[in-house]
Amino acid sequence: MSRQSFSAMALIRRGLAGHLGWQKQWRKANPKAAYDAVIVGGGGHGLGTAYYLAKEHGLTNIAVLEKGWVGGGNTGRNTTIIRSNYLFNESAALYDHSLKMWGSLSQVLNYNVMFSPRGVMMLAHTVHDIQVAKRHIHANRCNGVDNEWLEPEQAREFCPLLNISENIRYPVLGAALQRRGGTARHDAVAWGYARAADALGVDIIENCEVTAIKRGAGGAVEALETTRGPIRTARIGVSAAGNTSVVLALAGVKLPLESYPLQALVSEPVKPIFPCVVMSNTIHAYVSQSDKGELVIGAGTDAYTSYTQRGALHINNHTLDAICELFPNFRRMRMLRNWGGIVDVTPDRSPIIAKTPVPGLYVNCGWGTGGFKATPGAAHVFAWTIANDKPHRINAPFTIERFRDGFLIDEAAAAAVAH
Amino acid sequence: MLLIVCPYCGKRPEIEFTHGGQAHLVRPANQSQLDDQTWADFLYMRTNTKGVYAERWRHAHGCGRFFNAVRDTTTDHFIATYKSGTSYKSVTSGTAGDAP
Image (tube, rainbow over all chains, first blue to last red; front, top):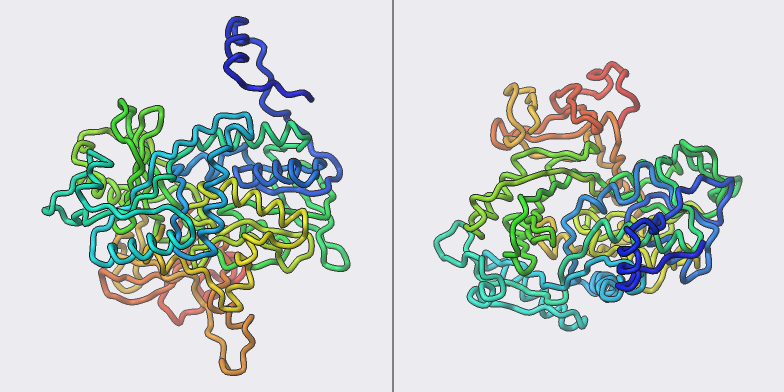
């Protein structure tokens, strides 16, 4: 079908006509009997993968299966922080690939994802934090990733609300700033990819849960059973975040993953007051302000594995303690909503974007607490992997076998905390 | 916040505990003869069960001891907590699905 293009002119024209002429953003597709490839999981990663498969690899007879609704999982639940200042070469290549794609994503998709490179500032509170931050800065510089050290006064200059008093429990001793980092509108990322993929012929099928994966005599995948009937396909790409272990178990594949609740919360909306993103790994607080005016606040994961999409209040309380000390102006603000998502965490806190031991079955998982930032880059290389049946240069190190062979990409140890 | 029954101390709030991951993982014998995959399976591979799951907890800010629990990860409801060394089957009487 031909697709209406979004532009200022189109907005004026439709506006004068009472906004009655807008098309649906994507079709409500019903599952066909067979596809060339099927993506399981209709979040940003899955929809993006389908888009790049269609756009760059000419695979248009494909479907995205989503058990709930598009963007209703972690894509719609995260705190939208985008950065690429990871320590190891492999991570820097992957995350910076993604960060570069964010810059032009709105134009590429003809959909405003509201990417805002407003700067991500990561605070240091201890001597150890300072050493870790500076090590990251130097490693990033060697990899062509911008990251710079700020003294406390410079940090306050960049974020005027920041309390740099020496008399707080965890005083700010400095910060690492990635100016190219920022935020984007999470829902728009899912919707933009869904719309663009649909325009290329991809079927986006909601309320369709995979219940079985059928394998042929040689072990390769042959078909899926779903709540909306069987689908034949020789290639399956799984982007199911917290539920990846469950989907892969259908094909008998075990993964080094554990699923934890991760919570976030937003305040009442206020006028623009907070110009950047501030993160503190040490005291587990992440905050930015959305264009709607809400403070968007992220906490650490809950202590235990769970699939409940909720967590305990003491985790949020702990984060708000930190926020209130770092930003005393926020003490009287009311929090509006809090929620949880389920994140799949690997032992080294780096993702898996790889072939599985089952021919025709591919997986993009293990993003833990930070998968949103990687949406375009991960989807791009995952599509490449599915189309070519071998990993792209950038995701080649992010295998399942790295845990067997001892090639961990240990961002967990590099950050020394959850990140 | 979860209310957890420590088999030694009784009901206590979650903040007194640390989570110890999947329970009943047995360290393989003959480690010098193991192949890499078996060792990696022991170190890293987890069932990550959606449903009834056996896990370890430690009453870190109480008696300090490890114990096991059976919990439904779709509801966070605890089915049982029991002392380390007790078998999974004897606790769930085989009604709680497959062994972990």
